[in-house]
Length: 472
Image 1: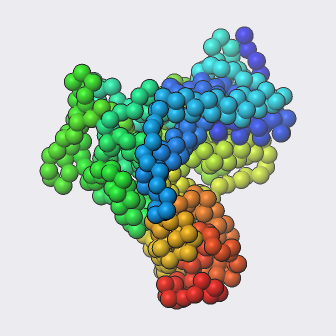
Image 2: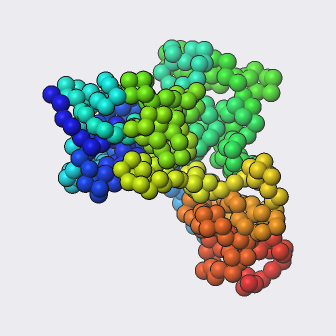
Image 3: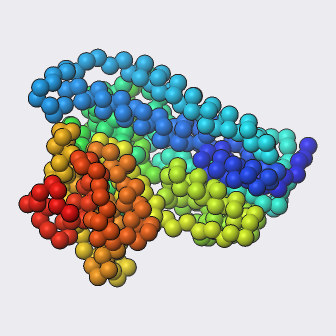
């Protein structure tokens, strides 16, 4: 059996849904083929099922549980309390089910021009995709099949029952000890989540520091805060092997020339992502991939095949729900209109949901200097922000990177409570090429954590630690 469409979308996550919604707006007869190679993903993709939503829910619960014995107010005493981890996971599952239905399944039902196929799809010719027993013909295609955890070639990994983010979010019981291989966003979020639930956590990072692409001040600050809650962090590590004997696992590694090993209940790989492309029959459509296997696209999200576009994690970094959606919508617009839209990825904010959180947008100091820009930086410790003292948490730093001559803000980098909410002023500044003076001239509510952006801007001109709260 065969059917003809204007557009066939391969995938069912953020990029695919944004593409389907935009296609429906343009009244295009569209097919969405939902299957992919990420085990835990059903309709809605990674974010709602095994990514952003469930992980941030468990991080929030873990922080609340941990704060029972770590609050900074002398007049209040709580105590550790008790934890029913199974119920926490069950409640998380109910939330995921609710969002999957309301934000994806129900939305799809209302897209009158979109037909959903809950099956794996692959190209059988340049203009045909096979989904089970059905052949879907179209003139144009969008690939948005996402990515899954990449497992590095470590000796013994194939003989160990390890975790990825998918399994870690659905454990029946809390592990007593956990080794996380990887010290970027995903690894650190899971490290703090489990540590705050009471698990002994060790992080092994191959680079010289965690979050190696962020500002050094950010990495240094977060390392300190994570170690303060009991997380062991080893950097500059090379994993030699992993082994398992009954339920206990061992990770052997080298750090700065010293060989060590750590025993644990569980091992979590947070070592990057690999694209879901192997089963798509890309060669039949003329679609090329890069050295990492990700689909290569130009600035308009178009692949090497003129009739195929791609969006989301399947094309590589940045792998963020919001940018995947923007890419999906942009791909449809470029495929069916004359808009020729492009995305400026330098304007895209991102966050790490530890606590305190990390957020960034734009260039780092090193990146700006690498482009030949003479930079000036304003660095503000959060202890100089009045609201931080009000809430009893002065952990953090704000760094503004600006062009020394024009004072245009090139990058904003934050470690602070609610940094993910604070970063959007920075995103607007970078997007609209605002200057340090523009930020200073903008009235901020007092006392707020968002005032830290203004104080960081003022630090370019004065010693903020010696000024009154009301200086303009």
